[in-house]
Length: 207
Image 1: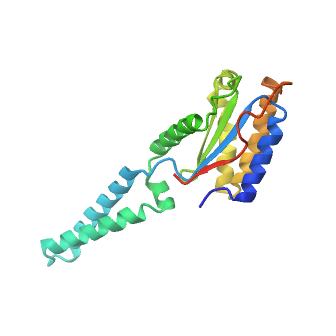
Image 2: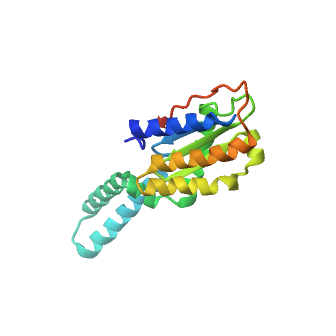
Image 3: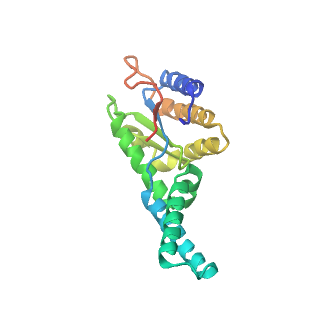
């Protein structure tokens, strides 16, 4: 299921339009269901379940034949692999560093995929929300990055993350769009010949 329903997307798109009327920057919001499938975490869980099943089988049912133990281990491995695909479980078993790295990579890909770099004055800003990991990345193009370093986005990132955790993701994104708009209005005021270079549509992906 997509993180933002139609009403939520409309609120975000309205916030983008409002803030782009007062700054030369271009704001792009991308929502992905997850940044990776994390197969190594799922296979590790399956292996752990298989080994555990084998140990428990030998301990409590020593009369089991080898082939029966193998079947038990195979069933446990399949169970572990399937359960680890549940978003809540997958989020818990995936190392934080790994999840952070994959969301960062997905944000860089989205920056290129949605042409956030293709603005006249290099003033595009990407907000990527990755639902599974409950992580957010904000990237500014060259002109913006020179004024606002990555550390300057952290409070905004946390505001959206908190919104996701509280079930108010769209409100969190809109609050951050407004806050960013205030900063960008100072550094990049709207120009007389300014045009809407990038669509205000919220981009959503199941992958």
